[in-house]
Image (cartoon, rainbow, N blue to C red; front, side):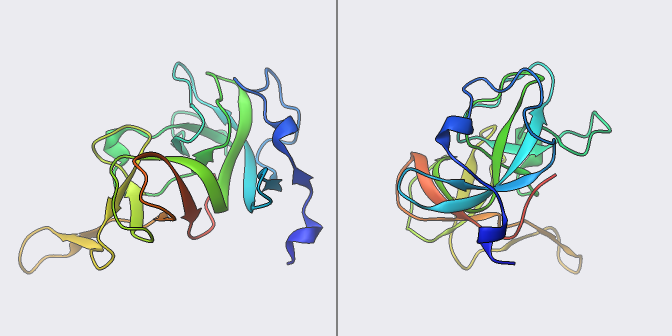
Length: 175
């Protein structure tokens, strides 16, 4: 389906701190247009309890609720696993906001610099960050003769910046 069939939201729809009540249908998908014209799919979600989800950090599904659209900040325990998306603006505890689930993201937290176009994984050492791995490194072997524990590639680095970097989300994520 061409992206022109999806409603497009702009920076004006992103509220710092999040919406106090749902301003859109929770869980809905829309296109988000960055100021440089780049597009991504965005999903309207509710942040979990207690911890703020700052812009550029990784969100994962919030398993503490039965709400399909509920997310929380990725902890180190989520390292190498799937993500829900990247927060496009800060979402306070129990507030609603937008996360990028597919496509270009201009500002996502990456924990170390490296080569552009390396694969990115949910970090197992820094909460809410993405972590680079060499392009050919996909799996961590557990023990000889057993299955491997795969780390899920969720994005690709677009530059070599440490901290806030531009990325390309691979796959179609969302809660």
